[in-house]
Image 1 (cartoon, one colour):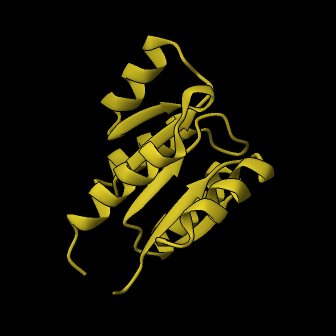
Image 2: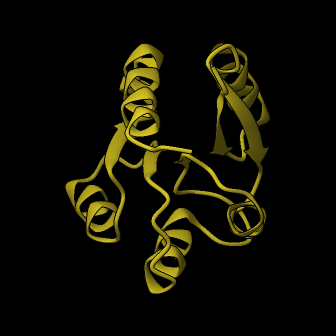
Length: 124
C-alpha cells in the first residue's frame, strides 16, 4: 500500500518532530516551519492533508487559509492551535478548515484518525 503524503505546518520544532515521529509509520510526513514555506510546499507537492498551526512566522495560518481559499485549492486542512476562542475557530472553519484541534486538548490518536479519514477518501 502506498503511503499518503501529509504536511505538518508548525513553528515549534519539538512539537512538529513529536507529531512526525508518531505519524510517519502511517504517512509520508513533510514539515514546514512558517506560513510562507507551507504555501510553497503545498504548491509543489500533492498533500492528502495539511495540519496547520495558526500562529506562525512569515504568514499566519489564517493567511494561508485565505490564499488556499482564493486559489480554490482542494487540499483538506486540519487546524491545530493554541487559539481556543470560538471566533478563531469559526473563522478558520469559514476559511475552509475541515476540523479544529486545540493543542492542549489534542489527542494525537484522534488527529491520526481524522487524517486517515481524509486520506482514505482520496484515490491516487
